Image 1 (cartoon, protein in one colour):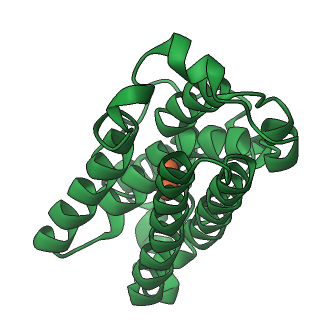
Image 2: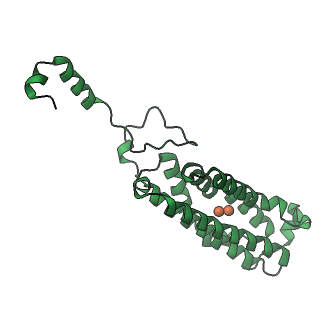
Image 3: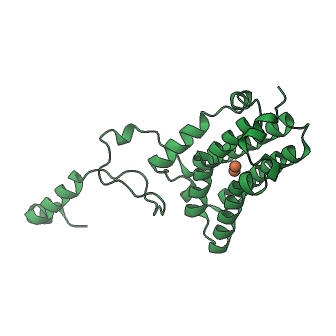
Length: 213
Ligand SMILES: [Fe+2]
Ligand SMILES: [Fe+2]
């Protein structure tokens, strides 16, 4: 450690110390995010934005997968009079339960230091959107298979899968496992077109299949 005398006698050093104190504060996150670039100009009110840790992000994401499972179980009940359709929703619900378990497993592999890091603001916004989705209100909007088809399409191209993908991309260290999970997600999203029985692939046919109240 330099003595005070040495610092006083070295104006350059003093200037350097001053510069290091006047540098702007860095945002809290330091992860090497692969899917989201850090913005060059952070908003002035950055420090007032919601701070969410990796651990909280995992918990919200797991909650979102469980809510999705609940939604598909609701659909299964609404279409229980049609075996083929209800089987598809049952499969979706099982996928969602599996997504929740995978995220729980992934979270369990992370250390406390990593879990306490802050998540980036883009993911915070995704998590916010997902938290506002009500399973009950969404199910109320479904009167026939076409309603269900449109909503599932919307949900599966939405935030829950974006968060799942983000967590897998950034926190699954094993490349093979990462590829496996990405493939599982693609297969899951593709069910609506691939696993939907051919007789229900037209909107007019889907309108005729009514949902139970
Ligand atoms: Fe899911
Ligand atoms: Fe899903």
